[in-house]
Length: 470
Length: 64
Image (cartoon, rainbow over all chains, first blue to last red):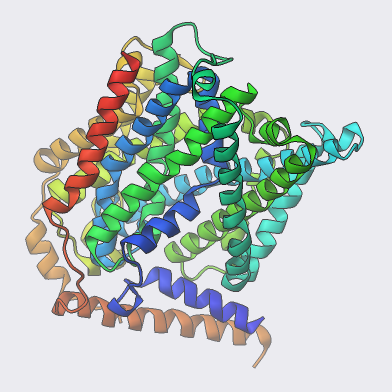
């Protein structure tokens, strides 16, 4: 028990303190593999499945590649901040958002993370229900409305238990889960390559396309843009351990912007082949009984691991922001995810969830990039990132420029597209909504922080260097 | 010492140690460039930029 507490305390210390040179273990290839392993999971297959349900193979591939690579290129320069100062996301963002602003961003991250956890767990639930269906179990255990939620909630509590055990248990789980999801991916590649010829595959029409072609493209693009922008709060956790700024930048770009697309593209092509957007349907449909069972087991292992990693990541982030809080309280912040798994409604609304992610992360992405590269000219005070009474207090802990940018970025997004009602104005079909919201937030932030809320940064940084924490 | 007091003592000690370590690391970053890692150059961003441009071009060609 004491060993576990010590290991968790070490992880918190490791996450809280700026990384020193000895702790920087990741070169370009390490960052590429670690982040690809973390990123390739249920969400990639599902976004691919959604895309393949509204677009044909050619358009799906083009939309997935552009929809992920472009937003990732827009946000990935922030990896330089984390690499240069060795700090994690919610400490690094204090410079742009203010101390309380960064705490608010953490709360938003935690709420959205509940969505990711429930997506992973519900896929476990569906896989388990499907597995029992193949084995001939009764309707209660195999139905999406009864069996799947029960298994999903059970898998969540298993994930919570493993996360509570700390880094050693997680290490073992990752060693099983990451190869499992990669095996699923390899299986899909083989099936897509050999089941039907390219001519037949590229001639299949999508089953759920919108009334107009442009609307199908724009909506599918928005889902993929959502996945691309969604990496914003996760870039810091590995980039801060990079051996060079270029490794952090390029490693993150190629992992989140390029490699992950393989899983999403395979998801889209399989979705077209099987005429279903759900990965659990694919396994038996393309693999038959035996391979289908194997595929479902691998899907369960991969998704439980994703849930463990997300739960643990949220716990550690909570402890980094609030180091005095207890470990069980940090993990308890993930418990509301169980509510989202109690029915298939949230899982089925994955497209809307992705659009919400696109909105939130695009706006914050525009703000933090503009702050670090243009307004602060890549120079921030490490001391003040940690001193809650330092120069990033702004107005009661919130940067007014960021607050105004958030409001106007939000207005831009919702004017272009309402993800709840799935209604859009005519410009949405040309520009999408997430990418314009990113640029709106960034430009407004620049104007506000340069002309409205200007302050002498150099003088303040110099004054802050004379202070001490102890 | 009671168990609760023992836990509280360990917690306080942990936070104190944490801030002591923080002070030394921040000073290190402020004082010398030894902790600093190689900076990114504009030319390092060229490959991701070109790849994104090619993907964008492919996307535009595909949807037209």
